[in-house]
Amino acid sequence: MAKDPFHQLDVIRKASQKGRVITDCYRLMYRRELWIKAYFRLFPEMKQPSQEGNLTRRLEGIITLLRTGNYRFKNLCNTHTKKIKKDYTNDYLVQEVICIILDKVFAPRGRAYGYSKHHSEHKVLTHIQHSWKGLTWCVHGNVGNVRCHLNQTSLINYISKRIRDQRFVNLIQQALIAVTRQDSRDIYGKRQQTSLPLLLEDIYLDRFDYLMEKQWKYVIKEFDQPGDGFTPQLQYIRYQNSFLIGVRASKKCVRMIKQGVINLLEHEFYLEWKKVDITHMTRPIPFLDYEFCKVKQKYFHQTKGNDLPIQESTKSYVIQLYISKKMVNQMAFQYGYGDITSFQATPRKKLLHYTEAKILHIYNTELIRITNYYKLAMNGHYLRPLYYLAKASFIKTIAMKRKTSYRKEVKRMSRRKQGGLGLITSHTKDQKNISSLF
Image 1 (spheres, helix red, strand yellow):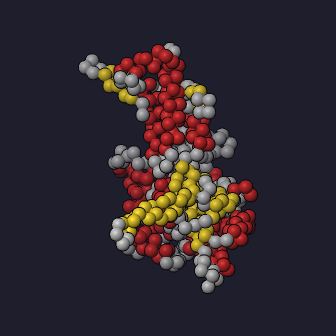
Image 2 (cartoon, rainbow, N blue to C red; image 1 turned 120 degrees about the vertical axis):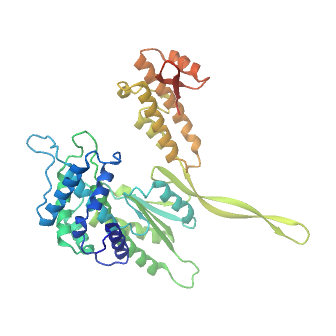
């Protein structure tokens, strides 16, 4: 084993990608550098530990318990009093270190994107735009709620085939039981910070990716007949629970693939029948809150003739991304802006206890997030009604907080920004800081 634990993790990742069995994962947890990295992943807002000595003693105590094999996960949710205990940091640290090691062992297979922060939705959609032009059919669906229907025995058996370290596998099994037993919120009302449940779901779906690869080989051998001048193509993408299978083949081949996927998910996973569909690539296909389809475009280029250059046009297909009107209506309802069909804005009463600067910050953060997420869409103008509705909702929220009318607030805000909406966020003797809505 290497002295640097991060170098050892790179060795584990390369060995796992070659299909080798991984060992000595439990001893890797004795390195304190991994625990410090796990601590900063759980608490990224802390650049330097406030009590470095206490943190070192805490980590040394956990490592000592792991060496002697006496570490046990605590039940954070007491079934009798239904109150969450305060000592939860140790369990989260152990789970996060397990995540660091498992993330290297079970790297995403092919075009399967898991819950890692490095796998963004834009990366997946950009790959579809560049490499799905020659496909004709798409089989798309969703594997459903994996957490509710996760078979722990099959998951542990699948992990033990890739990791030959019984102590580490037993620790994962104990952590899995603790995760299902813990409450989803901690004592501060925040979501559970460790990413172990999401990673275990992704490992469980890694079996789905492996079986799908075996099915590809069968389909290609069945339909790839030499001499007919047509070679079928398949491309597979899974992002978390949603998957796409792009196919360039006959309709009979696509139906066989769909039936194979349904049979696979019926025996191995939970899936409703309506979640697997076949759609032609020229029709809109929903994926990651986008819609993509194949569109024909003309390109003109000049060719030299006998006397004068001649312009010739060639037709080619491109993949374009769109925003659906249904998704815009859903976002307006989700954020509480109002009804976009009748264009009736509503005030957000849940924000009235915040300050005006905080309300403005919440609206700006939501609108910037929406704009950045849908920056790949060709019809970005579909978001304009949503912006106008959010603007009206913001004014009504401020008017309700100040107990004035909508018209008075419009005049008061537009007077400071010469037509735009301006709100005083801080007031001093020398100057006034005026912030505007996005």
